[in-house]
Length: 124
Image 1 (cartoon, rainbow, N blue to C red):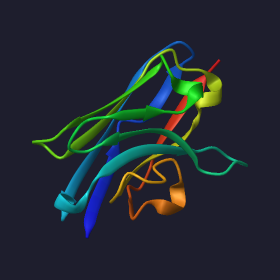
Image 2 (image 1 turned 180 degrees about the vertical axis):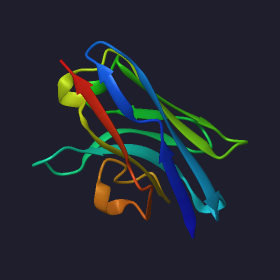
Image 3 (image 1 turned 135 degrees about the vertical axis):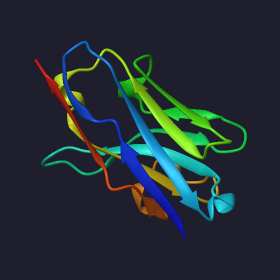
C-alpha cells in the first residue's frame, strides 16, 4: 500500500501562483510514475502532468505547458506541482496519483493510489 497526502491548494487571483505538494509513504519502492490530475465540476478527471520517479522524465498536458512544473524529491518521497500564470479555467480539485509502469501515464484508471485532493480556485 502507498499513502498519498495532497496539500497546498487555495484561492488565488488569475495570473497568480500556487505550489501543490504530495507526500508519499508506505511501499513507495514499487512506484514508477507519479502524476497530477484535476477534476472540475461537470468534467471528468483529467491528466495534468506526470514524472517518472527514478529518472525524472516529465510529461505535460498541452494546456499547462509553460505554466506548470512537476518535480519530485526522491529522498523525501515528495511530489510537487508549481503552478504559475493561473487561469480561472484551472479551477478544480487537484489529485496526485501513483502507479507502477510508465504505460498509460495519462489515464486516470491506470493509477493504483490517489491522494485525497486539494482544491484550487482561481478568481478572475
